[in-house]
Image (cartoon, rainbow, N blue to C red):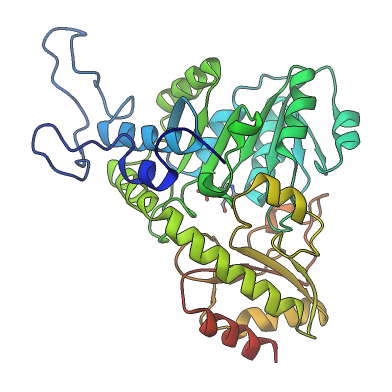
Length: 380
Ligand code: PLP
C-alpha cells in the first residue's frame, strides 16, 4: 500500500474538508437546505435541489473517493441502495457472476429482485478461477466479489478475478465493507467499482445507515449519479455528517479492532468447544497468505463453529454479555450473531445456506480481557 502524497489518516481527516471559506469552521457545515437560489434560470453555484446534489453529501463523496483511490464517489441511503444502483447498470438478458458466500441481502437483491427483471446470475466460489471461467457466458457483464466473504471470511484474489473478467470484457465490483479502504483498496488491484455499507466500519458507531459506490470508470460514475437522482435513495445531510465524522477515526479503530480480533481468534482456536475458526489472520487459515498480500491487516470479523452444533451455537449466542447479540457489524460495540437464523436467513434453502453451527463475531473496542472472558464464560 505504498502511495505518493498524504497518508490514509491525513486524508481521512482532511480530504475534501478544507475549513469553511465563509466562517473558518474546521468541521464541514451541515447543509439542510433542500433548494438553492438561482441568479437566473440555470445560473447557480452548482446546487439546485438536494436530491440531485447537496454540499454535505458532496464533501463525504470526495473523502470516500479519495480514501478508496477512486475518481468518483456517489453516496446512497444504505449499502443496499448503493448495490442496487450498481446492479442497475445491467440490462435484461445480461448475466452476472456472484461469489457463493456473500451478504444475504446482496443475494436476495440478485436472486429475488434482479431476476424478475430478466437479469441472470450464477453463484460460484470465486477462489476457484476455473469455476469462474466455466460460469462465464456470452451475456456475462459483471463479477461481484466480497472479500473477506460474509460470513465465512474467505479471501478472494481481486487481481486474479479482475484479469480474467477484463480479458472477457466484464466489470468487477468489490464489496469492501468488511475490509474498509484502510485495509484494502480494490481499485488498486483493478476493480472497476467498490461498494460499501457505510453503516458498518465507515460510520463505526451503530448510529447511521448509509452506503456508497466509488469508481474510476466515467461511464459507471455517470450511471450511478443518474440512478442516485432518478431513484432518489440519497442519504440525509445528517447521515453524511455522521459517516464523515466516523471516517476520521477509521484507521485507529481498525488498528485496535484487528489486534483484538486476532487475539480472540487465537483464544477460540485453542478452545475445546470450538470445532473450527475462520479468521484470515491465523497462519493456519487457507486465505492467510493472500490476505497478507492484499490487505494491510486481517480485519475484525471472526467466525467459528461449535462442536455441539446449532444448539450450542444458539446457547453461546444467548449467553454472552459484552458481545451483544445483534445483527450488523463494524462498530465500537462487539456483536455476536447466528448467521443461519439472522443475517443470512434470506439464503436458507439456497446454494449459499450457512452452517447452523456457525457464529459470527464483530470485534469492537472494549477491553480485550473483557472480550475473552465473556467468550470463555459463554463457552463453558
Ligand atoms: N454488504 C455487506 C458485506 C453487508 O454486511 C451489508 C449489511 O449487513 C450490506 C452490504 C448492506 O448494507 P446496508 O445494511 O447498509 O444496506
